[in-house]
Length: 232
Image (cartoon, rainbow, N blue to C red):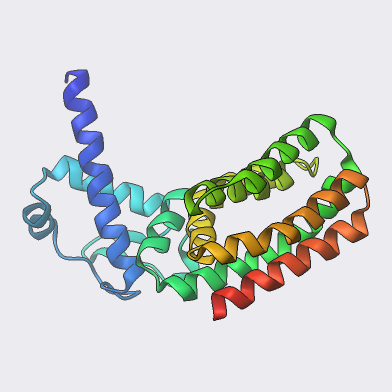
C-alpha cells in the first residue's frame, strides 16, 4: 500500500472514530446499547470494513466500546470511558452543554491549580519564572479577546510547568484545548478580560516572591471569580 493511501485510510478511520465517539458521548447511543451492524455503519460513513474496524479499535482503546462474539459492538458504561484521553476530552467538549462542561473543567482546575501555584512559588525555577513573566506581560499587552485568551492560556500552563512536578505538565497539555474554550467563554466581553488582569498579577507576584501560601490563596481567588463568571 502506498504512503498516500495509508495516510488517507488513517484520516478516514480518524474521522469515523470522531463521528462515532462524539455520537456516543452526546448520548445518541446509550451505555449498554449495541452499535449498528458493520454493513450499516460502512454504508453510513462510506468506508471499507478495514477502515471501520480500525475506527472501532480506536474507540475500544479509549474505553467507549467493547466487542462481544454474537453480540456486536456494545457501548460501555460511562464510568469506563477514558475522558482524560486527549481525543475523548476534546470530542466531549464539543458535544457537551458548554456551561455544564465548563463547570466540570472548573472543578478540576480548582483542585489542581492553587496547589500548583504554591509549588511554583516554592520551586523558584528561574527559567520557568521567565516564561510565566512573558505570559503575564502578554496578558497586560493584549488588545483584544483573541490575544488575551492566548496569553491567559500560556499563563496557566506556565504555572503548571513552573511547579517542578513533571506529572502536572502533561495534565496541562491534555486540557489545553478545552481550557482555551473556557477562557474564551469567560473573556467574551472586553471589560471582563480587562478586569481579570489584577487577579493574575496577584498570582504572578506571589509566585515571583516565593510566597507559596499567598500564591495558593491568589489562585483560589482567581478561580472563584472564574466560576462566578461561568455561572452567570
